Length: 466
Image 1 (tube, rainbow, N blue to C red):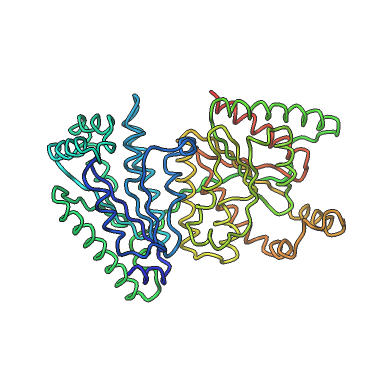
Image 2 (image 1 turned 180 degrees about the horizontal axis):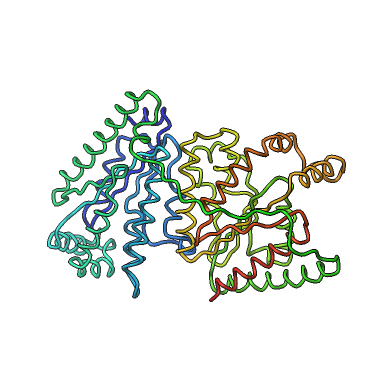
């Protein structure tokens, strides 16, 4: 079945969770014995590294999701880390609810993209756990495995029991089911996990063969939920015209403020993502250049987004963007972004209608989760008039120093102006949310556009620091 899932390019995620000393290592060790090691990755999840601490909880797991045709086995996972990292502080109950919501969104998105998800929890009693901890601690060869944290967790067994039950009940979904495995008998636990995996994969293969298109029962399982639409006002002309002297003075002033904001972000360990979308020739590159002009280059990254390569195509479409999200205190600027899913991929037919329609909800969930984790997110749409775009295209075509900026693809896209207009209207309306609203930059006048971009970053950052 591993070979068949590889040939059908279907990814698999297997999660093995459980109490300390419940046999997670034993089960995962047996599970991989007859798998081709070239086709799976085993991740043993422990305390986060410094880089992982600088990211949202699910980041370290999203970037480890398997490409099409491979298997990822997590010996402990996002569930253990959510328990360890979120069950603290005054508002820990709210943090747990947010974690559960984020996990459900994450797993649903993986399943909608075709991933098979199987989850196991190895259950033992408090008495059995103590017996195993004592046994390991008294054995010189295994005593190193037992830490003070293991005993502290054991003492809180009865307190954690209902919380673990809440996690399992709230995240037991048809697309990512839990199997609770009685693990007092280690042989039984191994056989139970093995047989459940085999039956689940056989069932998926049977459904795929019945449908004949490789999609399983995804469409039947998940209805597409479209977010509501909040119309966003779009204009290409600004409210103010600046003289060259006024522009130069304000530009310098704003750039100094942005530099100071960058240092405050670093000092307060707040990551900031800035997204630039808009029409071709609307001025995204020029805006980005002025935005980062005085920033410390060690603290920001500009990511130009083009066509995905094969490795990126083999993952969920958001995967390549998660890889580039900033660490705490750093800034990442995306020159185009995940919104390509509902723009160019929609208009050009690069993905099915069901995929780009699902993307509105997925994007909103991702952005809301990122902001709730403490990150900042600013989204710019650069609006330019159709006639002004033509003037800029012609200027680029006739200027030897600017010809590299214009391609045949730009001219082809212009022919589909109305289709892109319709797609961008819906994108703005469905993804401008309280957590991550769009800011439209009127870009017929480049001076106005650049100053509004800078002033928006400054104003947003002030609110972020409150």
